[in-house]
Image (cartoon, rainbow, N blue to C red; front, side, top):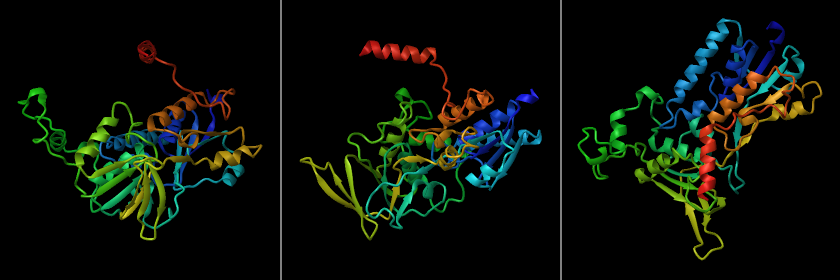
Amino acid sequence: PADQRLNIAVVGAGPAGLAFATTAATIGHNVTLYDKGVETGGQFNMAKRVPGKEEFHETIRYFNWQLRNLEKRGKVTMKLGTEISHSDMMNDNSFDKWICATGVNPRTPSIPGIHHPNVLSYIDVLRNNSKVGQRVAIIGAGGIGFDVAEFLLNHDDDADHDKRADEVNIKHFLEDWGVDQKNESRGGLLDNSASKSGSTMSGRQITMLQRKKGKLGKGLGKTTGWIHRATLAKSKRVDMLGSVTYNKIDEHGYLHVTLNKGTPEEEKRVLEVDNIITCAGQESKNDLEEDAAQDSELVSKVYAIGGAYEALELDAKRAIDMGTRLALKVKDNTVIPGAHIFQAGVGAEEKMFRLLTKIMK
């Protein structure tokens, strides 16, 4: 109904912002989508460059197709290349709601020398195309650290473009994982000596580090984590170090660390690398929401979603889910900032899993 249609501004065209904008416009609201970049996608544009994640090209294509159709119908206004400030929000009274999907910033670890020019963030590498040398240290071994390692192993700085899903070479993939294409071997798998590794194109030598004790990549997804770990192990070009204390980055850009500090196995090392890449987590980019919270006119109109709401362990699935669910309920007067995040109910499969886990303890 026309009396229930809202004029909504969405700031940020990443996963959460795209999901909110397309859903809200589809059900009848008038949406204006802002992004300071000149293309949609946000962190999708970095993720799609990682080997094995080429399908994100298609996710972006899907959302762009939706937006073009909604724009033709007059339901969405696109304003790319436009950065929104708190004063812009204060001075524009045409919107009933502001949705802040401004994403995240990389967290900078507190290490002496961290601002050395040889130190890069994952954004410098995946979005800004900074040149990376042959000897690399990666600080942080979570999902982003593993993505950057796989990207650097496979990416040649002279490559003219990133692969799309339909450009992935199936033959090379099967060879890489030792799949018997003639189906003559037992189990359909070749022995290790017959399989090939296609994960060393760049020739880089990488050292991954984390502060925690234990196996690197332990917190990766249960169904895909083993693939990431196996890919790096097969390359024979990645060293993984846990229980690391970061001492300093010296004038040469070398990383000084202590392994197993305070134990009989304590060892000091200097990693003579060309570049250090920080993948030490993310922080919400929520300046607009924080400023609005101090403004009596805006405080009830501004909703943060996606990484701007919570950066910890955020992934594209959660961001899209968050944006979609808020869009479906945003016209409800009981949905106010601070009480605007909704989740799906627990399904039968999850209930069964929890029950079996409880029984097996």
